Length: 141
Length: 267
Image (cartoon, rainbow over all chains, first blue to last red; front, side):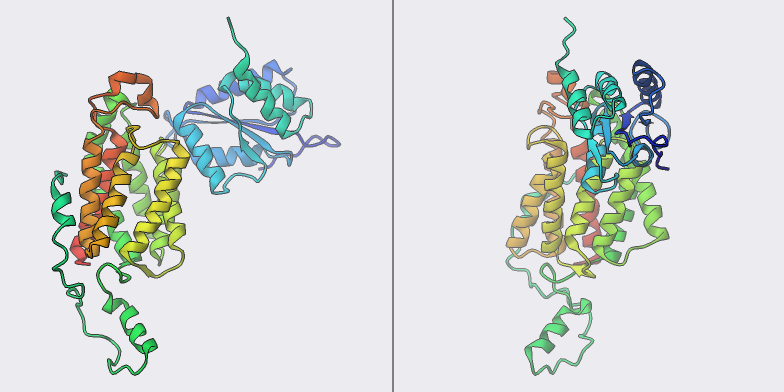
């Protein structure tokens, strides 16, 4: 499942977007990819919705998304609320995500945009995490 | 459930109990032991298990608990979702039913042979099938407790209590909740204390788990006047007051199933 980096390219940090809603996760992935130039090679993988497809969280989808986003440079996982955050934490605590996967403490949409744009520059996981977390400080008024 | 009031009754009056009264079968070994190792091997044999400090809880016991818990969650699913509707998203019962039905069928297909193995397997199923916050929370509780039990073929009530303590601590850390935040911890923490109190007083496994279930039920009811500080209900602030917490209620249900399982096994 792991996506290989483009031939000759260094591996990029992968981004996993975990939302209660499959459509929210997919749309935020589209938005973040689009705002970072559209042609980015950053693997951005949505993992939204419950196991039955309704609102909720699926640990299997998350684990699959993290494996698929892992090029070897680490995976930044952003989650929206409640069970999405708790499920990622439980999976990390039980080492069920790739070794380089980290939960990023960031606002979901703004953090996703910051993470994808930063990852597309070839930045490492720590830099991607800081950029996403910094999105908390962007006030709108 | 209606267990309120059982707590004090079952935690008291245990001193007259003969700790060996549930010796149900003759020792399978010759009893003319000449050394301590022989005595120990006879006493450690499951058929000679002592009530609370003997290894009375094996994989079959926890599989019976899972069956009882699944039946209870299935029966109470509508009630759990109803509790979840004024302060949550009305899916607690549905989620728990989905998780426990999946866990029961997974364990029937591939039954683990240790009590720790049963808890780890149930926890894994809950994390992957519940779909709400109770999945990672109960899943973490049971997986951590199961890992703490290790590979023992059978454990005592005190060992189970210690393992559950590890699991509950992990839940508190995962969810970041404290006692009084109107969460499952408000049922689980009093249950652990009651379990410890009853075991310290010399109670049998069944008596100690009954005390734990009663304390959990009492703890769940005591969440009614609390204001939620965790989860979706916390957005409601003062409006969360006056409703019993669904997570504390399901915790009490799971512990009641554990107490019933012990009662039926007379351990």
